[in-house]
Length: 215
Image 1 (spheres, rainbow, N blue to C red):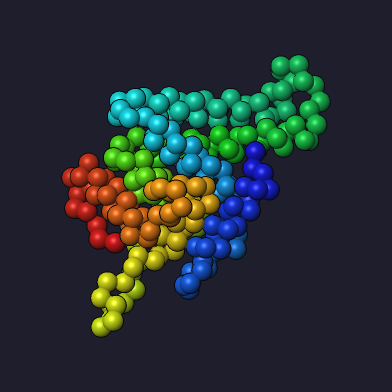
Image 2: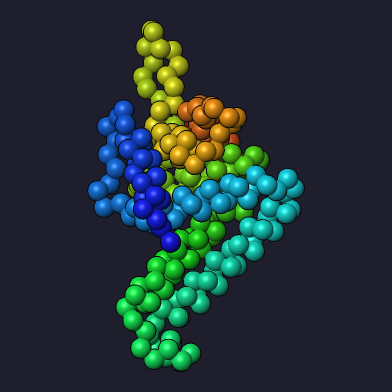
């Protein structure tokens, strides 16, 4: 279940995403859904990072996908009062049904993440998988904008403006919030996030025989 601390983490990430630009977070954003999705992203990252061999990573992802799909079907059935009566629960109270509905929503979120186009891609490092594949998927779903790199305008003083799109800020804030760091005491830079995004999408383009887009 989503805790108050989870929601506070979401609020801090969204605040950082909107900071320093004209980007506005949608007022009707599903904060609980986003909190669950970010939790899945962190779980994926840790699982990916713990597996050195590609076949084992893929096998675990496929098992997780099957579990997510089965959970949606099972919990969906149990969340209906008539189905509960069939297993001997005659008068389920509203709190029980509300809890089951919440579990269904979370299982569907897992199923959505597992069944997305990039769920079984092996794009290299765990960080590329996180910042280039998982987080963009969540960002685009919940914030409703394309995950881009977004550099400022070049000037005589600034020849190469740093990557600073809302997505870049979103990914950096996620990493800072949950302790995903290149090494102790350091944060990932916008350029590192941008590089992960380009690597993941270049991999996707190569897989489909398409020309990589520019961001």
